[in-house]
Amino acid sequence: STALAQHLSYVATFFSYAAGDQVVYRAIAILASLLEIFAYGVEDGAFLLREDAIPEGYNIIFIIVNSYYVLRWALNRSDMVGLGLLDATETELYKRCFEPLGVGAYQYVKLLRDAVWCAPTEETPLTVEGEPVTQLFLSVSGDF
Image (cartoon, rainbow, N blue to C red; front, side, top):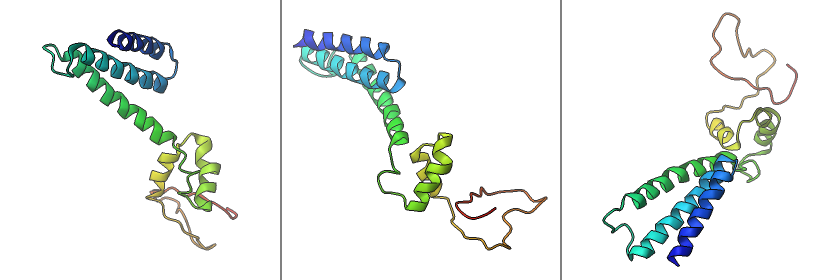
C-alpha cells in the first residue's frame, strides 16, 4: 500500500509537469502531494510525527498555496451569468460589452456592486468639456 501510494505520487508528479495548463498542473500536483503525505504517513505509522517532518510540512504548505490558486481560477471562471444571479439587462450588458473583452463573470459581478443604473433624459449631460471624467458610462440602449 505504501509503495503503491508512492508510485502513484510519482506518476501524478510526472503528469503534472507534462500538463501544459497551469491549473491542471496545480491540481495534479496537489493530488501528488496528498499521495506523498499519505504514503509517508502510512510508512511511519503516524502523520507529521516523524523526526524529519519537513517534507510533509512542505507538502502541506504546497497544497494550501496551490489550492488558493485553483480556487481563484475557479471563481474567475464560474458562470455567474448562467446561474441566474443577473437580470436580463445585466446579462445582456455582460455578453455584449464585457465578455468579448475577456472580463470574467466573477469580475463583472464585482464591478456591478459599484454600478449605478440611470435613464438620463435627452438634456442630461454625461460629460462636460474641460471637466475630468470620473465615471464610466455605458449605453445599454437608445441613440447616442
